[in-house]
Length: 130
Length: 297
Image 1 (cartoon, chains in turn purple, yellow):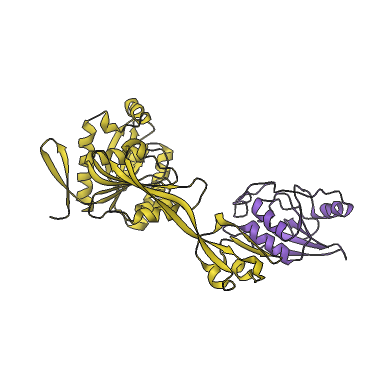
Image 2: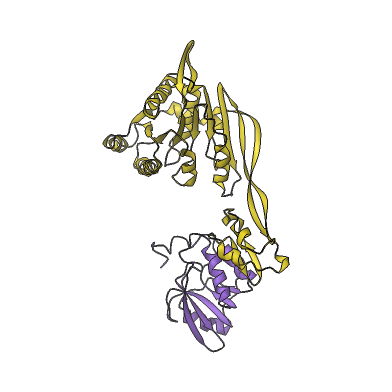
């Protein structure tokens, strides 16, 4: 199974980027062979609907699950339609999140946890959440 | 001259005006746009008045029109016949606003993001993308005392298609009449749509740092649109002199100054314009129109 994690950097030691739709990278982790690659998020600068575009991209990566901090209603709807499980509210490093996911200690989210346009502005030269 | 409109100034003293489209705008909300626009319409007596602030119309509280007819405003919205097994991926790729997503053979549509361009019909699988009419609001027409042709638009709360309603209003602008356009606040698309047809724009501001900041932004918009303009300072006496200094430095005419007067605020709260409680302001607003005629005419 492939897990996509919103990440601020390109390696496993990177902190999870809190914004699903406007994160810097996705760490696409293959649990079957413990390999990963970092994919730049092309939607982060979208004028609108970044979460929708990002969710489609993640579906294109054949991900079965998404790990992130904040996810809005639009992205959530697309991920749901794609049959991708969402684990939100997760912070810390990508590595730690994967370890916890493997142990089965992350709880699946049944609904979005932030409003539309929540991540807007933060990816556009303004200071994001620290 | 045929391009004249007449108005009663005093009993028996009929005065003629050039026909003008006057917009009343301001960057900052709550500076007195509607107060000025409604007072001016009442001073003129005979004109067309259009409340272009379709997200929060309020001029009808002051002009109290007798609304005679209502017309719904519809937009086109796509819908997708997904049971056909057709591939909608090109619709998702095409949509600049990401209103259409296509995953796992399923279409997810976000009507709030759709701008109604119809592109998905053109690029999508033939016959599987269709359009339907969706009501986004209405425009209302009526008469207000003494001889005002009143028009307003109302967007359904939460809807984002402001411009669709304004476009409908635009079609009713009567170029054979003097027209007062009460603009929405701000300087984004709805404000631009409201001022773009005007011969002259009155910017209402208050003499505070907030007022000045938003005045400067509004002036940039008007300069870009090449619309002659002047300023009315409302609540004169509060704040500082920065607005006046700014205008004199840039040679922007200050058309009138309305004092910060509790009586005006009390009248406002009862749905009355200032000319209903201070008769002398009728003359003063007419003089403003006269000044504008000279500049714009």
